[in-house]
Image 1 (cartoon, one colour):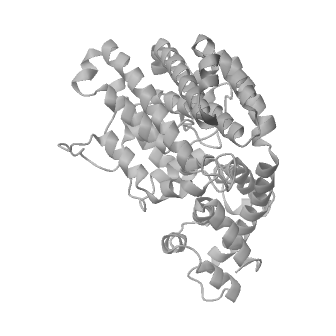
Image 2 (spheres, one colour):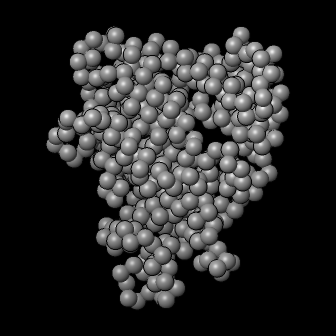
Image 3 (cartoon, rainbow, N blue to C red):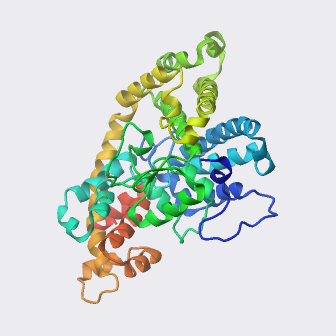
Amino acid sequence: MNWTALLSASRLGQKSTPSGSYRSAFEQDYDRIIFSHPFRRLQDKTQVHPLPEYDFVHTRLTHSLEVSSVGRSLGKRVGEVILERHPLLGQAFSLFDFGAIVAAAALAHDLGNPPFGHAGEDALSDFFAENQEAKKDVGDAAWADLVKFEGNAQGFRILNHHEYGMKLTCATLGAFTKYPCPALFPIRNKTKKSQRKYGYFQTEKVIFSDLAHQLELLSSGEGAWCRHPLAFLVEAADDICYSIIDLEDGCRLGLVTFEQTVELLAPILKDKLDRSKLAGEDGLNKKLGTLRAMSIGVLIDSCTDIFLSHEQDILNGTFDQALVDLCAFKNALEKISEVSIGKIYRARQVVEIEASGHEVLPGLLREFIFAAVAVGSEESSRKRSNLSLLFPPEIRVAILHSEGEYERLRHVIDFISGLTDRHALSLYGKIKGISY
């Protein structure tokens, strides 16, 4: 792969790239995402603690903003060295372009997440796994999409949906896609990080193929490609943020003690940790802020060095690992993950709300799949007809013009997965007669 193609500012379906703007094409990507409706919905979608009562606990929105900030730093740090190594690139690109691409892709990385986080993904997947009769109406590849809902693929679908009009550059779409392969993949190699999940649904198969050819990504087999190099930085930014900041949230909520938080971060900070100075800081917020900033800085440096040392392998398609898995702080991060799983992710209040998600999302999905049949039909029951009116107008139009059952199901899933946590709970209560 070559950087000139990988940094393509072209937009799929557009023949030319407008020039003369005071914003680069990649900065425009960032702005299009941050002002989009799907991005705003992230303010009420679960990060770790569903429906948080405290304003300092992260939602998907604040998490995405922070991942984008870390991603920008990673991109600029890497870009500076890449441009030194490849002087001709400097005629068309700057380190700010690298930073803007990673920042935009990182900003969008959670757009496809349904209500209730990973529990929501499981709930949507389980619905189809437990209703096998629907399999006869779709092909094997489409069924593989349905029985394993994937937020990354839903995000790619959102970014390429005409309704939102984002029309992002090929470079940003490539950096966004951590898993450039379909759900049904003949020889999935899970030792490769890029094939542990999938990144596009069958409805976006042609779009992703066009994107891969535009970026000149290397093929990894039938319907799969090697990652865009900057996707490794997007992944690293996400890994850094959820490791450090989820721990911070756990400490603020009293699920992990401050002393334990310090000991977990000490192997990362090493001699940067000044315990006496930290003891003199005023208040928990300032202490945690100091620890967070220093830890993220150390991890950015480490991931940057790893990426740059493997640049040629990445371009050759022979490197396929998470950057944090190779950094010197892997063991420390694994210990943080272990504590987070035991004390934060499985905290009672988290499990209780996640359990409700397992009831709410399949319930909504069941009702609205039936309602979709009523769209445009004059022979459906009053209940189905009434429910069909609850679809947003654009979803109703899309369902009406669906070509086959799989496409119709995709539109219903678009609606359900796009709900915020509170909207999902409220809608479920109303259609079940629990609330008014």
